[in-house]
Amino acid sequence: MRIVPEKLHWTGTVSAVEPRIRLLRSFSEMSHTYQGYTLIVDGRIGADDGQFRIGIGKALHAKHDFRIGDLLEGLCLPVQDPRRDSVTHYRVSRVKRRASGETVPHDGPPFQGIAPALTVYRERSRRRLAARKYSTKCFGCIWASKMAVEMLIDPWNPSYRYRTETFCYGPKSCRLYKAGRCRKVPGRKGMTWVEEDWVDEDATAHRGPDD
Ligand code: SF4
Image (cartoon, rainbow, N blue to C red; front, side, top):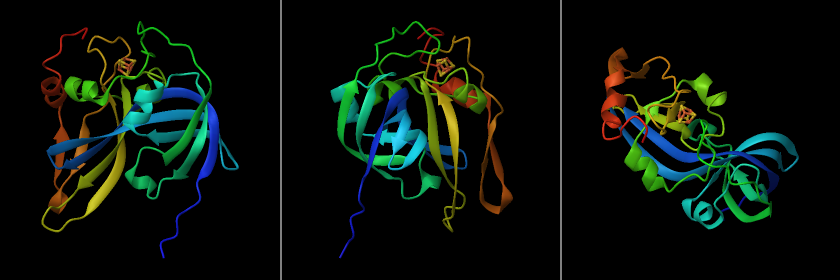
């Protein structure tokens, strides 16, 4: 008989909302899965106090338009394999908004309005963002995303490595932007692919500097 784990009660204040996107890399190839959104919440889950990353679905975000300052509560589970996820908790249910944060206009940076539909992120595409910028100056920006990355090392003898990477979907002219070092992707037989700047330039070539 399958044992269903008991969900934990959580409550806290939203300090950031960002898209929850998974990146699969296979040497120079990549694909994205748009899973939903991440609520970064300062509060309590079960008996633990702290800052948590809670994964939610796109329908829940569309229903509530979550924003910074919302006081929320609900139920959730810890993720099964933290290596494979950029959130700490997911499978959220019974969400209630106890108080509403203010809707901050989009005149950032960082831009702190309501995170748009996932199709908007997909259409805009992303540039790599230095991890330090992500966690400092860009914190709370709706265009920032910390992705769980799964790297297929050898397609003929499947083995994987995992890490997180940070990205920006915002305007290319943003004064806070810093790319950071080119990222390296391991491959079979000790080979390494370096993701040069042209990858980001190509991915966002359809946007003007202020789009
Ligand atoms: S660099 Fe990107 S993520 Fe950071 S504030 Fe600017 S638009 Fe937002």
